[in-house]
Image (cartoon, rainbow, N blue to C red; front, side, top):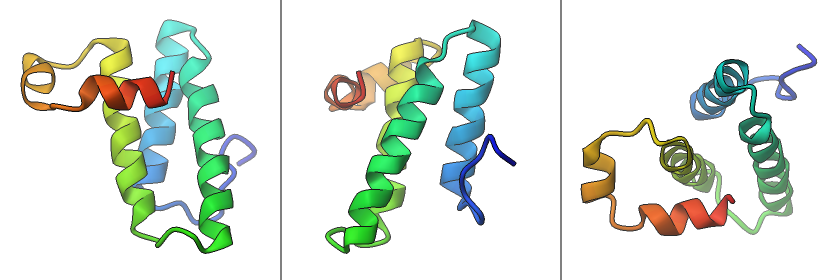
Length: 94
């Protein structure tokens, strides 16, 4: 339980955590987990301050998921062809 800091994780949060964790296991690269925790705790600060609505969490994690797809280049041609802001989103999480 110490690996996951949430008491009741929502599905996008849990999915992206385990995706980052398996990327860490298979590639021996700690950057996905580092990005996840930095992103998660900074998002929790913004959500606790009340400046963002609760549905913004799902939007941010959706963007984080596409940045993971872009940075690890196991995405298909569809993502490069049809996601217009894919390179912009990946710059946010470098």
